[in-house]
Each structure stands twice: as structure tokens, then as C-alpha cells.
Length: 184
Image (cartoon, rainbow, N blue to C red; front, side, top):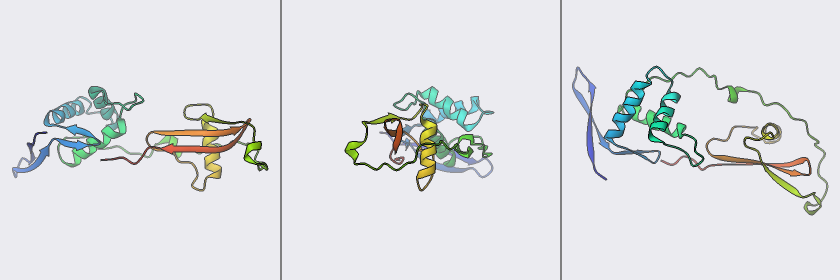
């Protein structure tokens, strides 16, 4: 690794300078002076677009993807915001109008047989574990967690897996795992 000092003009009138040591490591991505130039070019090319669109354009330029092939959009937005807060890039202001449709959408209740299971585990029909994410069982999973979990349903952030355990046609358990907290 090399140490590079990047001087940024903070004010044209006062000629104040801020010294930032590069490279920076943000969200496990090393940011060099050359990367700052690329980032600023992408921002300038997409100046009248949203921050999400800018981060997606940068992810595509860098081919920055998750193991599942999706763009690392949220990580990229965090990188951009961190660089903006350090005054290393010019970044358009965020537009937040609270229109997160999925989060604000009420969860539809799915009716199921709620008769208590009164038998020992070995007497249950063969249990089947069904992956829920992206399947027709996703609304059932959301409904059950909303109704029976003490915190209700919330979208799991980051990489996650969700399953429903069935005994025959009856759901008997919902399972959800989320990735570990972001590391810096």
C-alpha cells in the first residue's frame, strides 16, 4: 500500500485545504485518487438522476456485485455518502419523500388452520422445509410472522434466507436468517 496525500480546495475565497490520506477503505473497497476521479465522472454524467441511479451506474462501471450477481447498490451508496461527508466528491442532495411502498404497505392476513398441534414430534407427518424468498409462499410467511411474532414482520436487511416448515399442507414454523451486521 502506498500513502498518497490528496488536497481538496475547501473554499476558493479562503484557500483552506483539507488533507485526506488515500487510499481509503470503505465497505471493504479500497478507494484511490483514480477511483475518486471515476466516481466524480459517473456522478457528473448522471447529475440529474437519483442517488440510487448514480450508485447503480457506479456499480456497473466497477462491476461491483454480490455473490448472487446483484449490484452492491447499498454498499455503493454508503461509499458515496462517506466520500461526500469527507468532502471528496460533489454529490447531489438526497430526495427522501417517504415513498417506500413496500415498507409502508400493510401485510395481508392469510387465514390458516390454527388448531394446536397435540402430538409428539415423531407423530407429525414428514416435515418439509420450503424456501420462501421469491416463491408463492412469501405472502404466507409475511402474514404468519406479522401475526405471531412479538415484533411483527419487518423485511430482513441484507442477504437473508426465509423458510416455512410444513407438516403436510399445514405450516408449523417460520424461520428467517439475516447476514451479520455490516463490517467496516
